Length: 464
Image (cartoon, rainbow, N blue to C red):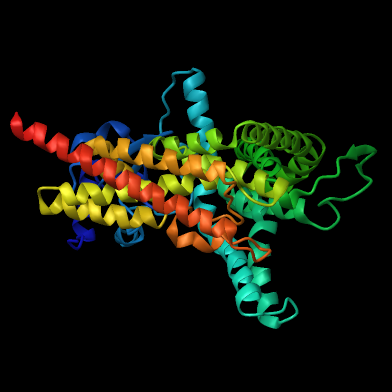
């Protein structure tokens, strides 16, 4: 694959965005460079999509996301070198991106999905590291005879448990940043919910008002609702309190108001919503497990394209908290992701020019590891026939996974790179074998179908 010129790509993006002065903020996730603009009318979208190294440009909730691939940190580093561009952090309210004033159910739903996805996306590296450490512990105990009393086990166990026990802290920080509020106060709220006198506390009251007993370390919705409320209070106080008093009184009053409201009202509501959601998802899965997982396998590339895949993480956490594993979301995404890889590799084999072959090959390898954005944006929705191949391969893999009860025991990016996530903690190998069969089948089917459809499409194009 040709080496990317990140300096040139950075310069080209800045030019199409209307110059450095028009860029309000630049951040990135696992595969996308995320840019907020002062004046969105200055962005030349057509030229932006033509920049070499840019797979696509996605506009979501006032944010312009340049799809790069897993090498996006290298491009982000070039933006950090520019003194005139703010990287990371929050955009001041005065510079906030203009939002489309149109209302409607579609826009509301898209906004909710974008908020949830944008909240969880920055936390994914922590979840993967913590989740796969759990798989490492299983390998240490089943294959190498390491005792839970050993110091090494205790250290790795701490890595695994801290990632998920402290999840409300990470989510609080990320959600507050997404809302352009104070991320550290969001993390503070998460830490308060986890404190020993509050988390799962019995017979707790606030001036005579009963506080519900909730295990906040296994929930995500209470802290999200709390941060939503906190951000409203925080921004209001920022407006009405004089500048010279803000440093002291804004954070103090914000937390003194937010914490009781969260514990008495929002926490129970969030916990109830999470319980209903988990029960609903489990009911659908138990009625028709094969069909449910197959649907996830078919639709995952579409969810990735519309930026909805990260919004499924709350369901994953609910399932793991409820039954100890995820037999639906990550299980369905595993064959879907590797099927994207198979389709991309087939497209690379058919490609007539070196650039298309290079893009498809790189995207295919990345997708086999579980990261599909480069493949979805750079290959599947460009050629169309690889999309059909990936959806069929992912759907068939999902069907087999549902029929044989495949499940994922820890949170990780579904794909071959996360194979340890499918090892049953009890040491049995059935689930691992089923997982390998499911993913190999998905790759093979998607590769063959894409190859057949692609050759037919190329032959038809040549005839014309």
